[in-house]
Image 1 (cartoon, rainbow, N blue to C red):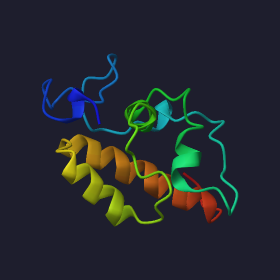
Image 2: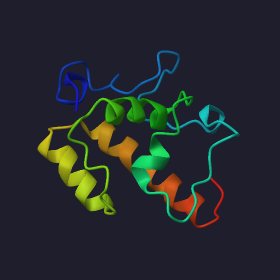
Image 3: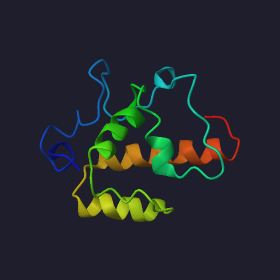
Length: 114
C-alpha cells in the first residue's frame, strides 16, 4: 500500500474525496448507477478494478489496490485481505473501504441491490 495507507497523511482525510466533509461516510449518490454487476466467476479484485470511475470510498480504495504490486489479488477471503492490510499497517479507513467494497461485490454477485 502507499504511504497514504501507512500513516503518512492525516487519517481523517485518507481515502476521502476532496469534495466530502466526512472521512468514512459512504454516500449513495456517489455510487454510479452503472456499477458493473460481477458474474459468478468474477473474483473480488477483478471486479474492484472495474470501478475506476467511482468518486466514493470504493473508487479511492481501488486506486490504492491498483498501485499495490503485492496485493493478494487471487484470494477469496475477506479475512485474508484484512490480514494483508494489517501487515501493511493500513489505516482503519482503508479497512472500512475494503469491507464496503467486499460487501457490495458480494451483494451484487448474489443478485442483491447495492
